[in-house]
Image (cartoon, rainbow, N blue to C red; front, side, top):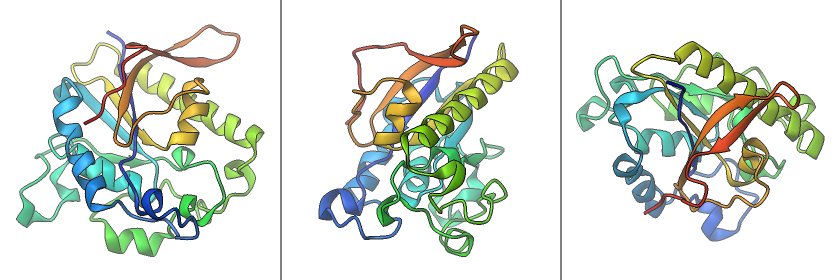
Length: 221
C-alpha cells in the first residue's frame, strides 16, 4: 500500500488576527491552539503515521505538537503534561516547507530561539541562515516552485521507503501560500488547521505530483 500524505495548514496565528505582518515568526493564538488540538480527532488512522514533516516557523511547529500528541514522541512535551507517546514518531523540521514571502511574519527564528522554546527538536536540518529569504529560499515564483519540487521529491522517496509498512502515512504541516505551490492547486485555500489527503506519483515527465484523494473535501473544526 502507498502512503497517504496529509497536507495540514497551520492553525490561527497572531498575525492572522492583528494583520501586523512586521511581527517576526508569530506564534499561535489561543484559538489557534484550540484549532490545532482538534486535529487529533479528524486525521484518520493515526497508527499508520510514520513521518511528520513541519515548516520550522513557530506556528507550524506549535500546530504539529498540538495536533499530534497521540503520535509524536513524548520527548517533545513537558513531562508534567503527560503528552506524547513512548517511542513515538520524530518531528522533522523541513526548511523547504517555510512560507513563501520575505515578510517578518513569514521569516523563521534563529536556532537559539527555537532551542529555548521547544523541547528536544533536532535542528540539524536547519542550516545557518535558513530563514533568510535568499538563494534557494528566495520568495520569487521560480525559487518557490523549485522548493516545492524538492519537497515532492522527498515525499516520493519517503513513499517508496515506507511502501508496505504498517506505518506508512506522512503528515506535512505548512502554510497557505506555499501549499498552492506544493499541491499544484493554485486555488487551494484550506481553513486554519484544515487538511487534505493526497497520494504521490511520478509520470516521468513533470516529476512527482500530488493527487488529492478527497478532491472536494476539506477538513476542519
